[in-house]
Image (cartoon, rainbow, N blue to C red; front, top):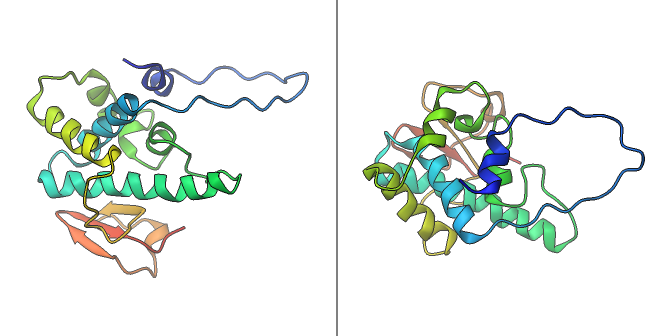
Length: 171
């Protein structure tokens, strides 16, 4: 398991006041790590949705990454993070990574050779390499049908894929 995945699953350290604040830059993940994190996210978030649903969730992560990269080029950071690990692991963004979510243990235990996980890895590889078509129309958010998150109030989905509604007008 990569260091980034291990960091996501490790409990947060106990914090104590630092003598002087230091800006530490987290190292950028490798493509291999990004593929692994994204594949686990796809499995945890959309494993019952078929290929089109898995691809749509991958597009959401990649759309967030594109926006984060644009902000980074301007010397800023986006609140949802600057790489797949930060974007997927941010609390309450992709529920399968939330502490206490039963999917977290499931995605942590995934190994190559699991047929569906291997499918998720192929989709993630295409997404990370920039060759996955975005059928969400630039969506950065989604939710399952029948769930009504506050951030979606008054917004119209850009597309419905499987059992998920996707939005491209949420900041």
